[in-house]
Length: 470
Ligand code: PA5
Image (tube, rainbow, N blue to C red; front, side, top):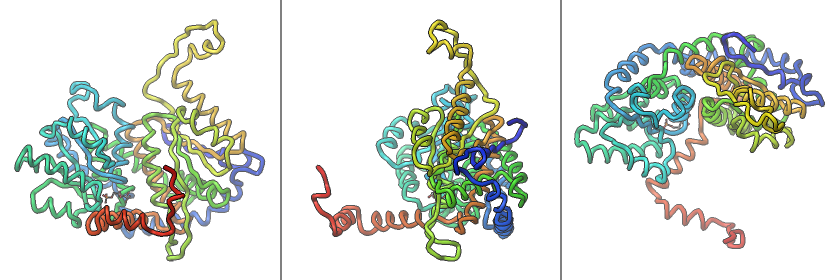
């Protein structure tokens, strides 16, 4: 693999490479060309009608201008940024932070961070983390980005209420300067509060779904505030969008990724779809993808309203770590998986392994190589082991882990999700299952009360004491 772009090598998804009746017949992939043309036409139509707003994010120069203005001006007066958000309002920012910042960014001194702020993402609502985190935080020097498209998500809003009370207790009316809301331009309680109190805001376009929002203000504002090259991110995404602007299945990387995964699931029983970066900086891209793939494709209803209960189960893994945890099962367990490796052609750093203990065969073979050689050798060895045992796998190779490549990768996976949604016959943009959980939480916390719900739920028959072991 070479060149300066993102490369998708799917040889090991195909039957000739795997043998033994495993893998997808290339003729079957070719036969999907027509169906893919329809999927592409549908995506283009939905894009034109404004339903798939994420496609247009690389062109949103106005928002980028506001982001830059804030990030380079007022934003730099804070030493810490804390994102309050969950799901699509958090995972993209975490993926960008892990990929594009120093791995110990928040522990670096001010000078080492070139005076850019620290960046934390709260995400979960477990007080075991939040309480000690807040105890250590100097809120007088912190900006809180409250990120919620709906403005009504229980986790984010409860974090907001806690923070707001602390800010007001410490700063009186000064609290306003320490809050910025990223939310729907018109709707929702956050928008209402911001308008009433003069709190700064940035919009999430209504046509951009939460898990597709990383390249909107949701991911771009925190990224810009810590000095990440957001122009590069958007340029990479735009380049990938152009590459995927063809209805020729074999020339469109998002189409190939989406179609191969779809065929693997529906025709080869491979409904467990692992993403396994051999790169620490990319490990949270796998986490971001896990949400994108699961929440978009796991659906009860078809677009026609029939019950179909479809969707692959995405799994994240990390090379080489999970070679010593998961790979045994991937290589020898049931034929129910695909593995997508993420690889990096030109890693930014390397470390020599010294030639010590040369006389000991078990150690001597390592000396004189580098850690990247070891990482890549292990990836190839895992790929070969999987293929030899008839397990489907493919590799997405990035030239480098930089803003441009990352923007391209995120856009590739988002477009692939739209295509896969069409092939499954579902709408990848909605999430009725998540909404159900949100409504239940709202009802229980707001009206019924936790204790009453617990009593009612636990009293539900059949329930026997002998089915509990104490
Ligand atoms: O992709 C989605 O729509 C969800 O995962 C949301 O991002 C998540 O539930 C948070 O919702 P909100 O941004 O409305 O607070």
